[in-house]
Image (cartoon, rainbow, N blue to C red; front, side, top):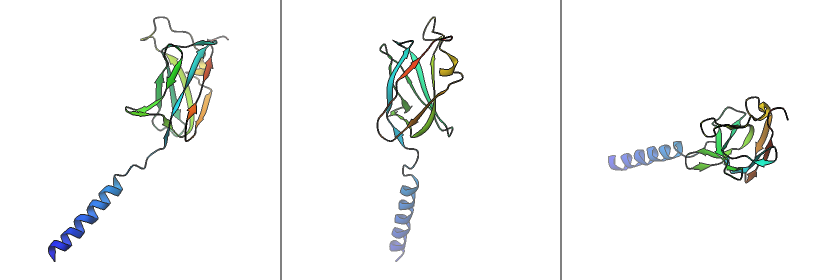
Length: 131
């Protein structure tokens, strides 16, 4: 009798543990695209999608052709589904004389994108300050 009761208790605890550890969390969707600066591919630009709900941001870096793919975290590509503010910057640590990207694309970003379930291709044509 005690063995049966112990088995039932262990089975119940195991089920509770499995349910409690299941993946609920945020829905993540693939995000990729191309960034150009004044019409030319922008290499080594950091693209960040910051969710409007202040969740974890997703980031990516452009290649020589200006293409990027976002990563939510190590081993998981994409961004949280929902509205985001996008910033595009080029680091002084990566590029000796980085372009002066207009503030409306980075420090005072006006870029907004809504990530939907499924594939999300977003291209950006940014300009230098004063254009």
